[in-house]
View 1 (cartoon, each protein chain N blue to C red):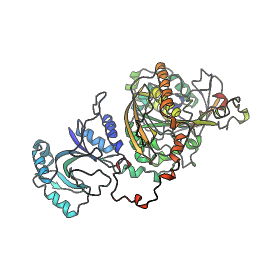
View 2 (cartoon, rainbow over the protein chains, first blue to last red):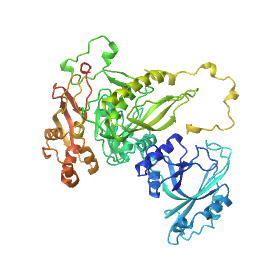
View 3 (cartoon, rainbow over the protein chains, first blue to last red):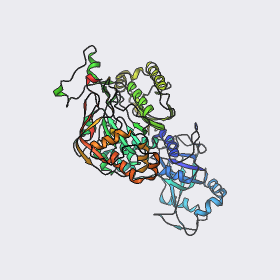
View 4 (cartoon, each protein chain N blue to C red):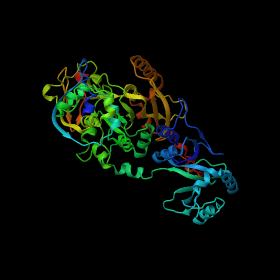
Length: 477
Length: 124
């Protein structure tokens, strides 16, 4: 069945992958190397909020809309057209067998008018609703809590387009609402009211998107190897998953900022079950027992890119000093000794993450993580880290500044871990490091991001700053 | 630190081959109630090292688990067993104490419920 899926106009790259992940979570049968079928309305550009998607049942559509962050609503389309005459023809030709059951005299209904591109006055809205008298509504109107909710959606051509590409032609849709988003979720979890925050805490919207990409749900165990303040785990817990986190910095994980301001208090704030475990450990030298594998259903994280927070790993002095003998801690100082740590490049960090995921994820488990990308003017093809156990299923870019963005990668484990695979992965990692990431080594991404603008590029002509036509914002939304 | 975590950890000092299971030195053990989710417990059961779990539970003061690992059939039928397993895995907390390596005797401290598994410079 085709449904009209209306998205919020934000984070454009993330919209469809989220729906695909949720469709799979709610039982949509998707064949091995395929994805959902999507269709664009006539004359619409891919960035439009309106997309048609094929799903096998209304229930799946409803569940997706309810849990999704970027889907505003899912609708059964009764008609569409470029003008109201066309819309009328389209609705009249839609089979009665699909319409009449929702128009019965013992039901209540409401018709809402939504416009994109221009605001309508109350009079104009009423006129449009009146024009629908050819639909045999027999029930009563109930504006607060109707049995059936109908939407008349109009995209209007206009000079200012709220950041959308100019629509070639006006288009009108009429549909019955099948599912809608939970609008209370984001205001409740927004970071500004969170008890314990850190400089790189993941914002609530993105954390929920990541949890959706990972298909977090009740009965599953989700792990974050860079847990920090627990912002990602909070979202996974909200969706019912059991959570577990680790970090190399013990102050963030154990102490927080006090007994009422730490990772545990974040979970307490929302009445969520506490994480199953919080550990201090080094992902480069993890303390897992040797037989342990395939225990996590999903690994969701935001590794340190080295721009605002750098990664650390064990063995500081040895690495820094080179030829000096390993430092031996005197016995009386052992208990409170904080081991020195050394620099941990992003490439090595991601390699360890892939290795951890390859071993510890269940088959078909998902690894969801962010990877920084420099926005090159030359527009060369970007290559991401790979591992023989994983298939990359989604890549979504979030632009952070004119210089760089971060990309959310979703990988699914398709091959079981073995010693042979470990060797193949090591070679892949070396190749990746050699050929693709010169600018990511040891602080270079940091310098690229914070490099001052070349002063010769700044125009002295003030007119150059005036931009009369609003630019298409594209992926900046 | 819960027993479910203890069951995953071993001593990873360079050169150590028998780092599992870590012996629990219980300083302060408390019980905290956790919602019972049978699917989760069944899923975890398959990944557990049973003997280590039973020994660990005993060090924390809980001796209700059977010595031998039960068959999978018991998981489906016996809810009271699942509840005992749930209690052992998730509801017993080691707030203060240490995890001791069976081979070297090295102590990994547990403070405020969080084990510190970071190695010192000479153990890497």
